[in-house]
Length: 461
Image 1 (tube, rainbow, N blue to C red):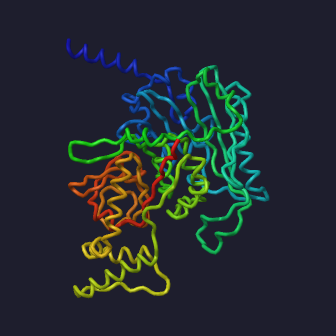
Image 2 (image 1 turned 135 degrees about the vertical axis):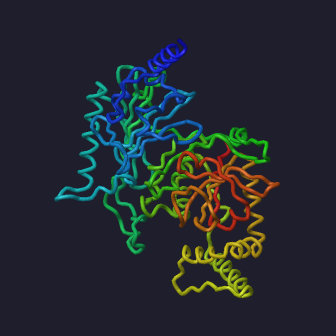
Image 3 (image 1 turned 45 degrees about the horizontal axis):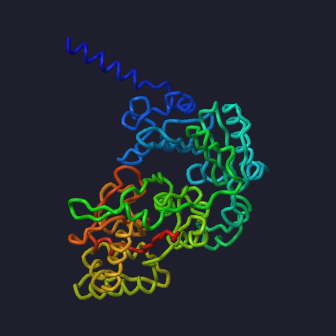
């Protein structure tokens, strides 16, 4: 009897959680009237686990990556390169679908006598027609938003059946410098046209905030105040002082660690930041990524748009690096170990990893021989965390042992968001999704691999 009751209860619960969606055709999910009642607690099930993974253990969103080995997913027949379903208050709140992005899709180039701009705008027009037919609404276009010289965002919004608010946003760059090409001698040449992204965002329609009646001029970022963000500073029972509520972004297989890190911090402040927009501004390459210097220089040019002040606390300087190498070589010579040689062309990554073969010696060269730099690093971390300001932290991977990294070595950008003064440890996070939200590292190891430290300080209101 008990077995029959258990089976009946299981069937009833399954019925409550039933959802008539074929995730290979995402429109069936979006069109389901039960969509907005779907909760994060029961979202992942056998019908969709092959498509989605949680962005973090907080279950604020799930992500579908359109990799080559991912099961195909489309929306109205259009390929999804990435889909993120976000949750607020435990329920589905927003769906973001990447219909094209340069980082995942690759560059659109001239083909068979057809210019890249004509190919891209043909894609945009086709997508607009499909969405208009599906929504049953002509839609409203907004005024072009200027990011910077040669870069604009265009938008069109629809309302479907008075239940769904739909926005398509797309962008391209025109006559810009080719900062992201592999050949450094080509980086100052102008690119005639480059397609950047097409993104679809779907949310529940709110008649009080009808997107079709939005102002033609984009609103200036409303950034959280210094008082607001200080409320995010907490202390746990292990003695860590840390910042909570930093959203997770999964950069996927793109070399977008710098822009993904910037996106997380800007979203933490309440801005509508997007890594594709930031990658466009920084001219990031999906393979080469963006150097910290390029990223910071770009953000300084548009910092007013995001309502923050960009500050540099530790910056990579060649003379400082060479001093560290010379200090390391002195220690090596004294210990009877091999010294690091270098010529006129200096491969920083190769030298770092050569020194990494003797980690204790490298740590001494960095921490003991540069005590003022090390002390300043610790002070900057404690000062900013206490104020609720996360730090962008650029490092060289592969020197200090870390578990579960999808990137074995080379330059990388991450976030420092906490510290333990008694244990001399930091808390940090990587933009690789779940399992990368909270990690611990000794302070001296952290300084040893540091190449840069930056903050986005909120402007005073």
